[in-house]
Image 1 (tube, rainbow, N blue to C red):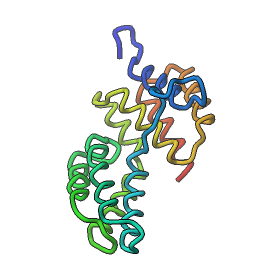
Image 2 (cartoon, rainbow, N blue to C red; image 1 turned 180 degrees about the vertical axis):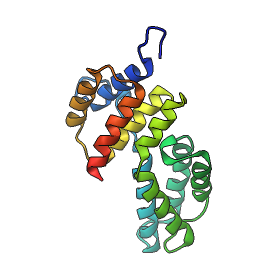
Image 3 (tube, rainbow, N blue to C red; image 1 turned 60 degrees about the vertical axis):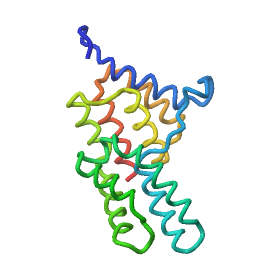
Length: 181
């Protein structure tokens, strides 16, 4: 929060979310091209099932696991540091179906889905969020849940009218997420 009492992180987050949800008018380098962490983990879990059926190669699944490592580590919505470290370590192993690692990944995904944005709100209360990462994370998560960008654009603009704090934005996003669960 600035000395004038305005939550500049919240303003940044909402401004970037409006950019992401615009159907037109936003230059492509400023658009959102990310997949959220929860959906990325779900896609990996499914890819490992297809690997077991010889539809995907082990190299394809290995590439996907390695790419997820960078995404998962700093994602505060996935849980505390110990759990994020466990996920990172799990991603270093083969997750072929069936295996204990593949089953553990499913358990982690179920945990991550519930309370994902609420955990980000807790991180925001502690003051340990970066606005650009946070805006991308929230936007991707809501889009991954199936909300249209036009709906989310209207939601972001409506949310901005009440001059919310960063935590307020996250809790409002969590309410939306809960409606899709």
